[in-house]
Length: 155
Ligand code: SME
Image (cartoon, rainbow, N blue to C red; front, side):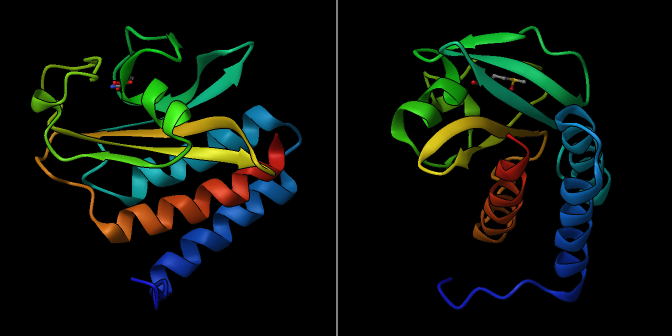
């Protein structure tokens, strides 16, 4: 997918992300806006949230979906911790076969965690769960990495 080109609707979404990032009065409202946008535009995103890296731990930020039992995740735990340790996006097509997985809902089948970078440093993550198995394709990964790159600006 090196020749990846966003579709018109993906470009519109990225434009709206850009607007939230450029016009929000603070970090929380920018992240809140972006999460709402992602959750309402993608049917296969069952739980959509942000974790913010603070004092060596991941703290739950804005999200859409059922409340998560994991408001704080240490970096040695979960897919979320693994994405920070590996310094890259992790896609888990079947959460039930991944021993790192921390369950949020028993209906979740697959997950993607996309780091948010500020320069070279990870400052947070976009975490998305789906009730569909193997829900996250290269296309989702590319768009979410572009979204993450934009929201790195509010950190
Ligand atoms: N599944 C994540 C934990 C967060 S919940 O999905 C909201 C993990 O394994 O790190």
